[in-house]
Image 1 (cartoon, rainbow, N blue to C red):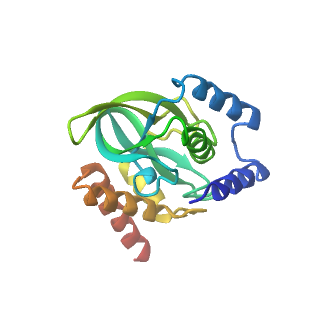
Image 2 (cartoon, rainbow, N blue to C red):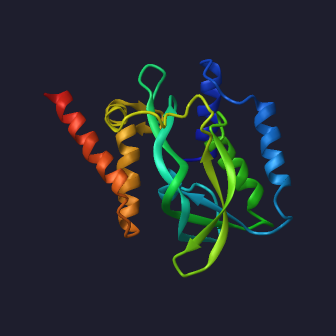
Length: 219
């Protein structure tokens, strides 16, 4: 998806009165983030959900990596990309504990960084549910790199880590937003992980639950 798509989606949320960061607050956080980066050095960004199969920004290198101490979880309420206010969905957040395999993207600090951060900011930081956090990641070739990952803020009102697996499956099976059905988001993530040779049991189990929930609805 293009920058313009995510920009329009943000503007629509503002028009509908949905909770988003103000332009001033969003820009303040973005500038603070950019200021914290070493000048002109390449930067790695970690993708654990849709960024694995649709990064959307220019990069020099892509590699499968593993994070320790964090796991992906359907713990973020979505009333835009994969749901609505009336029928909210759930998207993935990087939460504490466990282990997570995903994709890391190396962005050129001289020519690509500002454009990539602007894109990621308008895509991922609409409501401030995520905190960009620098984490060590192990590349599949043995290297260790420092990756910026969008870690879920457990104090945010969109954090849904308390929901049962059954409730999450019910929401994913019915919700649909500007980027399409919530179920497709889950299916695409599982498919991309399988392409990488990874079986995330929590996601495959969730997909089974979603299919079961859809079957009950059809009955």
